Image 1 (tube, rainbow, N blue to C red):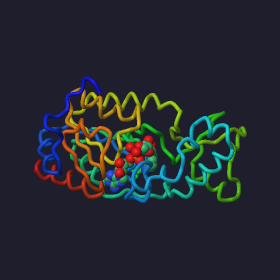
Image 2: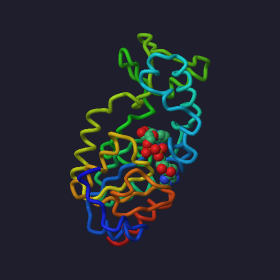
Image 3: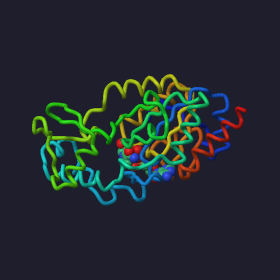
Image 4: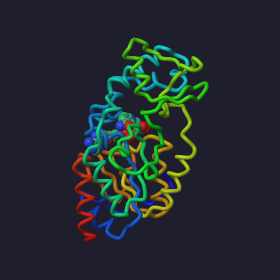
Length: 264
Ligand code: NAD
């Protein structure tokens, strides 16, 4: 981590410190991870009840998905059971919409694939998805697109590994699997937003998945204030100005509402 200046004395803690830090900042970027959606009923990967406690991530690489029918069966089954398509936004997502309406949120860069920021009411252009969106699927051969709900209907009807109806190719949800490249346009846009912001708030992420975690790092490198809201420690706590350890569904509305009150 050469080249970073750590806050002297370590990060401050709590909502009040975050409000003080953000008071004069007008270009706030939110960077979200799986933890913002656990209160919507979608498990994270690395938290105390995370998916990786019972499932080996090595089973779900891009390579394995393309070559193993068994991996695809398990993957579609887990997607059906996750309830991700029916999940609803929680108070943390809704608080970000209020911040957006105030004109102080430049965008949300998300690692999530659940589409909950858009469902909460943020406009499409204000959400940058680094790891894709589970609501859509595509054929890996002919690129034909199909709603994931339609694929899961075929799974429920007894076809555990549905092939593309057009060309017979492998269908895959529009999400970035391990070993698969990041979407270039979204990644470029996220990095640009990181350079432009004057504060970045990370919400519900271990900040240990790269290259995604370079987004807050770039922001800090260019002088942005850095606030982390997370249950438990993250890989980048030392870089933060303020840490808020608590459930996003309480901490994000608490921070946003206090911030908007100070602006009145
Ligand atoms: P992660 O699983 O690595 O970490 C989540 C973090 O959030 C953990 O530190 C956990 O303690 C914390 N957390 C859990 N619930 C919280 C809450 N209510 N309030 C505050 N913090 C909470 O997640 P990540 O850093 O986003 O990286 C993992 C990858 O997981 C990402 O690439 C993402 O694509 C993928 N993922 C997405 C979803 C989703 O779309 N909802 C779900 C699971 C995994």
